[in-house]
Image 1 (tube, rainbow, N blue to C red):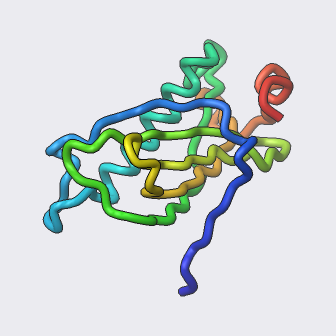
Image 2 (image 1 turned 90 degrees about the horizontal axis):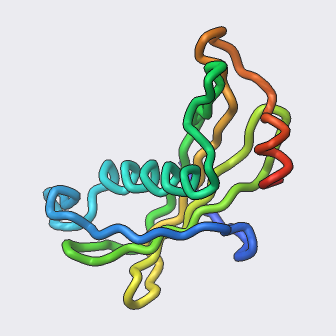
Length: 141
């Protein structure tokens, strides 16, 4: 399989947060594990949504569901480094789009990873994909 290559325009990122690499994030090779990075990406996405006043699921049962994930690792990260997570949105379609992430070491700016989560809006009560709410589309698309 060919290597995944991700790149995103700088102007797509509209949020940033910082998180430390915890000792529990370290794997057997003594660096940040891929499972821990994926959890950190989910945390960054949740913080992004909260910062814009968006709930993971609305009262009518509509929420965001992740459809796919692509991650391109660029360098190791170690305990207790502080990581900077930049988050943005792009490639909207009728039902969703992509959350995109740029992860760097906060102190040096060294790239650690790029990632993208495909997502759709999903009504958990009806168990079906639904169109992007207009309030979400008008804010980010």
